[in-house]
Amino acid sequence: MAASLALHEVKDVSTVVPERDALALYVHWPFCVSKCPYCDFNSHVRDRIDQAAWREALLADLAHEARLLPERRLTSIFFGGGTPSLMEPETAAAVIEAAGAHWVTDDDIEITLEANPSSVEAARFADLAAAGVNRVSLGLQSLDDSALAFLGRAHSVTDGLAALETAQRHFRRVSFDLIYALPGQRVQDWQAMLDRALGFGTGHLSLYQLTIEPGTRFATMVARRDFEPLGADASAELFELTQERTAAAGLPAYEISNHARPGEESRHNLAYWRYRDYAGIGPGAHGRRLGQRTVRHKKPENFIAAVARNGHGLVEEEALSAREAAHEALVMGLRLAEGLDTDELTERLGAELVEEAAVARLVRLGLLERRRTHLAVTSQGRLLLDSILGEIAA
Image 1 (spheres, rainbow, N blue to C red):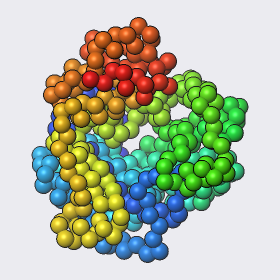
Image 2: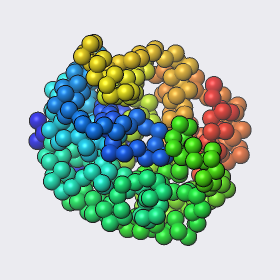
Image 3: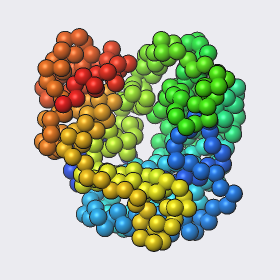
Image 4: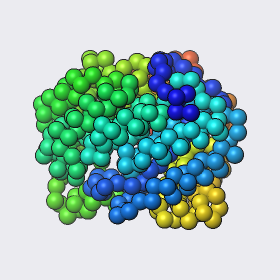
């Protein structure tokens, strides 16, 4: 099975309109070596992980979703976390093979796995590639050792660059993450780091501003005044610089925080942002299928118990109203540089997405662009996206 899902030529997805039978699969691996102070994802540190038990639980959870979503065309698989590179390659191979048995898969299916530099080595990447993974997203987070220490990362810059070189040797498509707008970060320092990152030759970069999420260790530290987050004006200046430098290097933003050469956009994430169905399995995984929002148990032990009891890890299935779905589609679609087709979504979801009078006013102000039925945020409007959504949502 792995051979049938091996590397294929990458198509330019920026102009592809997803078909209605298309389906994406998200697989959550919840375990990490340690918890980063900025992270609010569903991640857990455990002394021991029964890999075989987790393999069987994920396969059972997958089979449940497949029974509810028959005769779909699988376009992508995304192993997220947590730290999926801590997963045994045999587990990834088993999930990929099972997904191919449950659904028809695209010949050039995108199969992504998130990895941390401190948890990977050449043998593991080689085995993951043999299992069918053809795209890796590497959590470098910074190219400065002091910043990595502040972010609580377990790797050094040297470790990160070695992992990046290994990834580029084994996978045709490689992306990596950087976090910027750190406390006290200067424009010239971020520009130098970004230019260095652009020189590594990957076709995709995810560039996130540091946000202080409730419930994280950083939130506690800010409350204690251990450090002061970078101000809004300074963060905006770094954001604008990021857009300029990535565009000049041929990796323009196709989403607020994601940059790619044309044709190397993450197809899996495009399925989210274009508001298509995706099955989510594993602890804490969210999904969207047939007008429902699905949520799995977050705590690993609760998830395992639920699968043993019920044959799946679901804790919540909620039918979305047409209005709720329309609002979600608007929020996600306007993150994309391509924007969204309001008429297509209105027809598909059964509810109006926008107030046209508010749209017309923001078009006149240069914050939105309207091309027939297509609506997109302009470069001037990107920094005001939250306010724009509040004004135009139907």
